[in-house]
Amino acid sequence: MSKAGIIRASAFFGILALLPLGVKPQWVINLLIFTLMYAALASSWNLIGGYAGYPSLGHAAFFGFGAYFIGIIFENSVGNGYNPFFILPLVGLCAAIISIPIGFIAMKTRKDVFAIVTITLLFMVQTLAYNWRGLTGGAQGKGVAVPPFDPATFGRPYYYVMLILLLTAMSISMYFRRSKIGLSLAAVRADEDKAHGVGIQVTTVKIIAFALSVAIAAMVGAVWGYYEGFIYPQFAVDPLITIGMVLMTFLGGRATLWGPVLGAFILVPAQQYFSYEFGATQFYLLAYAAIFLVIMLVLPRGILPTLTDRIRLKAKIVAEANK
Amino acid sequence: MHSVIQALILGSLTGGVYALMASGQTLIFGIMKVINLAQGAFVIVASYLTFSLFQMTGLDPFLLIIVTTPIMFILGAATQWFLLRPLRPDDAAELSLLVTFAVALGLEGALSIVYKTTLRSIMPGYENHSWTLWGYQINEVRFYAFLLSIAMLGVLYLLLQKTKFGRSVRATVQNPMSAQLLGVNSKAVSAFGFGLGVSTTAAAGAVFGLITPFNPGSHYDLISRLLTIVVLGGMGAIGGSVIAALIMGIGAALVSALAAPIWSDFTFFAVLLLVLLLRPRGLFGAKVRGAL
Image (cartoon, rainbow over the protein chains, first blue to last red):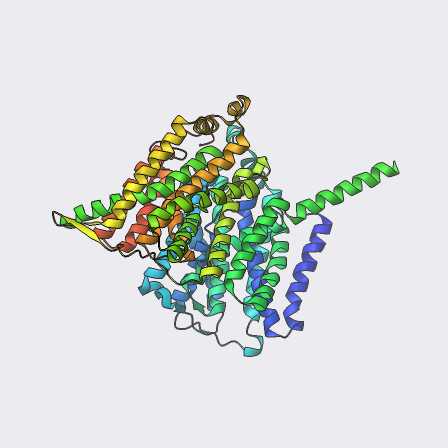
């Protein structure tokens, strides 16, 4: 990591770590929790959808899996309130284990087949959540025990855990950029046949990326479920969560470190603002779709790659002029 | 035994309706290698269109298909022309998938603003009639729908096999580059092909609205079913998708008769995984380059 990169990352996480100490209003903390949540989700989606170029449409299934995991274990008591957070690695591990056979089958052939399998998985998990009433409570939802946190700073533990999850996702992303696995994924993304031909273990690297990606999504889902305190199938396993992470990743820039984070920091506050102004969810479905289409058509590479290219180009022109 | 045969009848009739939806989707995939995640949403749009026209005019829903088909065609062609054609070719395959997903959400959003989320049904008065044949129920609407599906598939077949447009489409499916060299206007073919694929949802939507109550979110139920059928039939093989639709229709009906209706959803996912594991190109698909 370059020196500037380290400074940038430390400043970003430093400010975010201090923010809850200075900012008191509950709604700001709430907004920040959701922003961090989507930043972590988008960063995790980026591992498979960005670096490997395999667009998963089923991440919300794993998100919901994590939420129900916490909901089912901690239905009655959470002790001092921190126990669910210690379970998180287990949630991630379980999600990763589940994802391996699915990824193996789904990524055997082609990218569009992968999208088909993952979206089908999403709807299947949703059906399960609605109908496996003994476990999930069905449409009535599942409550999680309320932790004995101080009401004045209730959101704080969730905030910091989301921040840690974002840090984890970004660290993996960083590692991907610097390591052989990242290079392998870039090769897979560019031309899988050739990558296979030059001896890259394509199946292995794809499965690793997918497993890491959904593990984070599941952990984020677990924290979300715990924070919400009540888990409904239509919100826990929601195609809108999937589309949210995809949208933010695309907006910021796929296969970049900061792109998904930037996307989340733009879209989540915007989304909250619009739902506050206009209320109706139908409108924001339409708004989501519209933003998505505009990004795809106008800015298909995302903000960051477009900007860096422009800055580079400008620097080059300046250098040429000074010659 | 009685319930098994009853399920077979019901399943093949339902399969006919799926065949109509899936054949359009397969056609779209064949021409442009685009997986149209909005096919289910287009079906629901067609259902609402039929619903509204039926309420306004009182004409028979089956008759209204004549009106809705060109509308759906235009909607499909416009989607391709304005949203898919401008994508850059190097990542068009991945982006088009997401674009069609966004279109699906957009259509759902638009429909929920216009019609709210109340469940609707198209009720011409004969929707629950059925004939009894040797003790087996044959639902009248489903039977007509089945006949209609076969007729529409016949029209589609003739269009593809006997017309100049059909020849251009088939040429584009087989080899886009040489088709273009031989003077096929591939842009026009893509737009027309997409329109044609979407226009099959007009009839499918009318029937869907007759046999099931629907709301704007109903397209989610269709997405995974249609995709499974398309994969099972072999991506790009229209005949394959028809047979796959019948298989899945019967399979789902059998599972829901013998186990519980809820399991029929899982049948689709299980079949999808099995097909990908055992025969990734599907029943009738050509071996695809790039498959490892």
